Length: 135
Image 1 (cartoon, one colour):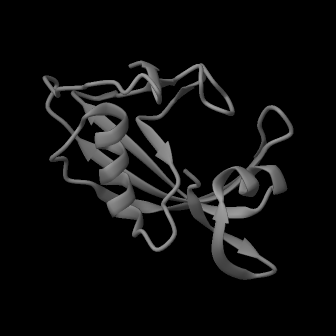
Image 2 (cartoon, helix red, strand yellow; image 1 turned 180 degrees about the horizontal axis):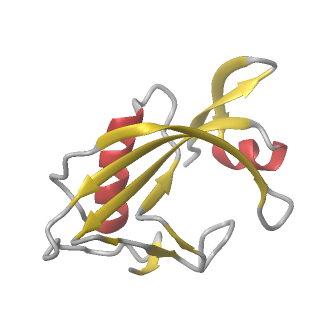
Image 3 (cartoon, rainbow, N blue to C red; image 1 turned 60 degrees about the horizontal axis):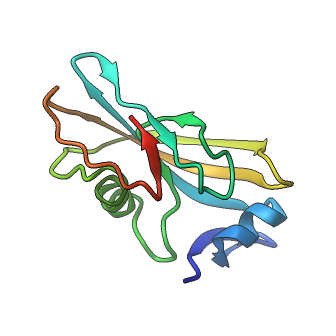
C-alpha cells in the first residue's frame, strides 16, 4: 500500500509517495510527539524492519501525515498504531524544519509539527513490532 504524504514539489504542496519523498529529498510534512510521564520522556527504538534508521532510538512517535490528514489527527492515529496509546491531550508546541541525510541515500527534509502530552506513569503501552522494537 502506497502512503501519500504532503510534500512540496516546485513550490506546490502535493501528494507524493513517502519513499519517493525521501529518495528525492523533497521537503515534506511530518509530525513528532513527545510523551512525558513523571518528568521522563517516553522513547521508542525503531523496529529493525524500518526502511531507514532501523534500531535508532527516537522520541515517542515521529511520523508523516497522509495527504489531507490534519497533523493532530495523524499524531493521535500513530500513537495508537505504534504504541497502543490512546486518550492523551496532545498540545501543539510549534513547528521546526530540518534536513538530514539518513542511510541508504535517503534524505529527511521535514517541516515538523511538534506535539507534547503528559501521561500517567502507569500508561499502558502495546508496542507494534512492525514499528517499535523497544520503549
